[in-house]
Image 1: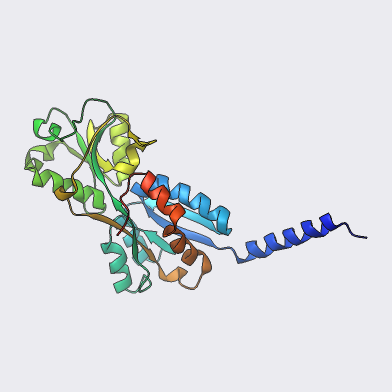
Image 2: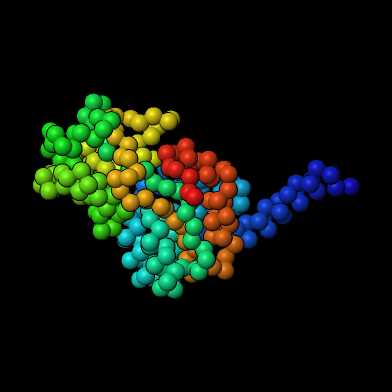
Length: 252
């Protein structure tokens, strides 16, 4: 007689094989500011669904160019809402799929305590050698930083001190390494256990255009279960709790 435990193990194994056969590998392009929360979300998503996420992180502008040139991404988590809409209009994204997964928050940050005050007055004082921003042509957070400086009337004076990173992740490295004394980054990048490391000014939302971050299902993933499941998971309570914990405002 075959032991019941053996049968149970065999059935469980067969179920795992069946699940693996149905599982997708999902190439996902993710805006650099969303690296940490996405890694956490993806890990839980993989555990719950069996699908495998293959994530690439970078600037939204560069991902747009790559997708238009045939890069086989199946999902794009952008740092804006314009790029997903444009991809849908151009036939590279699935109509009706985009939605906002987070509202980004911009901060002026220094790795050192006491450098950035809580009103951003350091920008007008100008007592620093370099300020880093992401390329405003490619990165929405970089464009937001330029917008803030212009609204405060300091852009022209600070232009000679600006160093530009290809992505907001590179901007973070410039500031963390001390190559730039301060820079505009996403709150999610500098928030650790609910507190900001170094010194920072959380920029008031009325000083820059709302950074509404949208996700879009791309045409290579439209008939696959994995990409669709990932979009659904992003809307769920578990993913949204992670997003909130990393300093993003809930999407409305």
